[in-house]
Image (tube, rainbow, N blue to C red):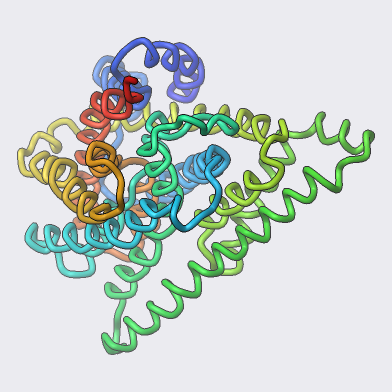
Length: 405
């Protein structure tokens, strides 16, 4: 409760502070949480060692934050859904992310993990994060003109790859629990079900939900009385449709993260100038920022309590290698030949923020893996998120500054 109240009270002040400094809110919250953890005895001791209660809490809390962030990200995208305009996004998803998973898996095996555990490490660390990358993304809806193309690419990438990391998480789980199944059967089942079918279900359910929501908002509610009722209960309605879209996709075995992002994109594509778009965004943004501030403070406290365990150069070397080596290299390879200026490609390649989504996938997969290995991966993920928050937080404003005419 102490952390909850602190996060909510500080939210508006930290947002204002971040605008006048080179720092991002994420970096400020992490630093504040670390100081809070070191300076008070009011908070209970926290450990990264696996236990079912910790894993369940982390899974559900991070899940809620990511869902709300994905909807907000989808509503920001003013750019029409066009193959050529989204070329950078497809390259980042189809080339950069896959290469990142492969390289991180190899690094995990070199670290000493078995293949399934190393693949889990790759799956949880490869996707960029829409939560910590919030301040590197496009602004609110209806102001995309003049938006930095790198911001558009980073927003769409984070929106899609938080769902596309799931098939690789399932592959790691399947490999860990292979049993008597042959590798060929395992890979084929994974390919047609976890990769193709469930991705298709997530996108399809998201498209249907977005079309239905658009019809309700912009056509079915033209009656003045209904419109007045909607205005009074707008926030509850939008939150409910978001949760229903996510839960519906999950119940039908599609990927809920993909569904809510696609639903937001489809809704945004209808009646683009309607004021409801900004109203939806503002409401969801407040929820998202509140939950994110609490989560980041808790992560900062966790850093303070894990101080001795984190004081190992190998963890930080791994994190630096991923943030300064793997992501920029795979990002530049993915964007090679896309026709964009090198400065823009370099900004996108470097600003591959790691964050909250990684903890969600790790907590989701936790019951299927060895506890000691999970604790080790948790430390690697935590170090990577800290390094990413610091380096990307300090450099993002300069890299994404508008071109001087």
